[in-house]
Image (cartoon, rainbow, N blue to C red; front, side, top):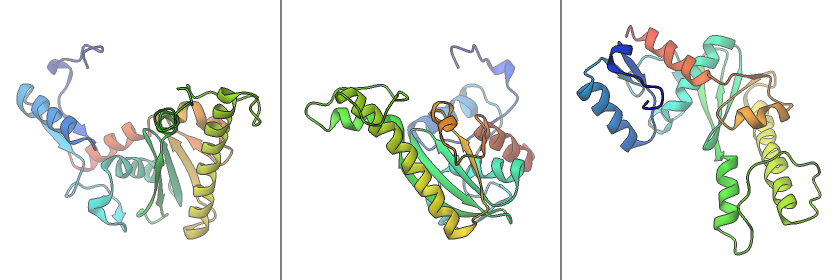
Length: 208
């Protein structure tokens, strides 16, 4: 917010999706205290237009927001893949039923784990490797992380399709998705602002 020079005058109300308690507390203090503007936190009791078939208290607000956006924008049976800090996979039926999904470590976390939990492997950036058979340690790590991650995502998507809808379209989003989605032939649509769209829709559903 500091970099963008957002001020109270620029905002009339806010809608929040946050799964980090200390950050959520800070946002409450900012909007409800310092700036004193109406705000809505996505959580239990907030209208989403979805029927939650998973354990509602266990589903992160970010996953619900993405599901709302995808169901509204694209309809039909959907699998939403959010390539973020963690990579989440969510299944939503054509009847707007949120069935649940899967959670895997994000590709960035995977790279850090190799560096932090092994004795000799270096820290690497995520890169698109030229080959799968690496000729040195760094090349081998790039190949393992990149191709392994695409394989992980493809396998989960395929299994989810078999479990609820073979014709499900796959919607990708998330920060890492900007880098990796174009290499995933199983993703039908990539929407980098899916979460923001979901927040807007929830905001409108709740008359905020």
